[in-house]
Length: 218
Image (cartoon, rainbow, N blue to C red):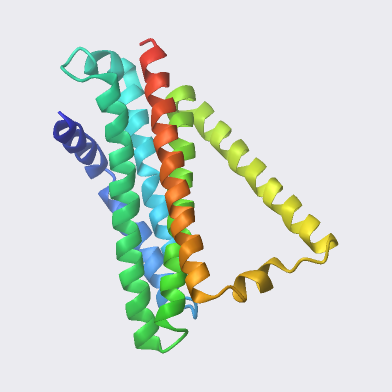
């Protein structure tokens, strides 16, 4: 049944295939004409992950969920499939972006492959966290309200980050210098810990989303 749900969503997204190509073309174009080819590593996976939200909106359109759950589809499987779809879209785009960034880095001889790799592994946990945040909001509040709630939450996280940065500045703590001075082993351990923490957050998010779906009336 999970395979059937994935096929359904990919067929839904087939109607947006032109938008897929436009996003990829924009990413490649910016990487080709910019000295920072790693930009697309952050841009492409995040934007393509948003297509998961569009499939949820399509399912809700014209009371579609009420029909969908008359089929042998459980709400738990439906929710898990959305997370699998987000990981497939985001992870696939992340791999494509990393390969493209490495190719541009080598071809243009700007920056280093190790820098691209460090950027890639740093962005990965951020991507997972964004997916963990956006799916429950979309399932709970629906299309328009879900986007507003998501933007508000991301804005709050941005403000918290700014406050932390300002507090560090007042206390005379140079966060960027601290990160630059981390030994390679410590940096690797830190990135691994961040990815693990993001994965745990994703599992918690999935549990929350399953509860939301089970309590939702159609």
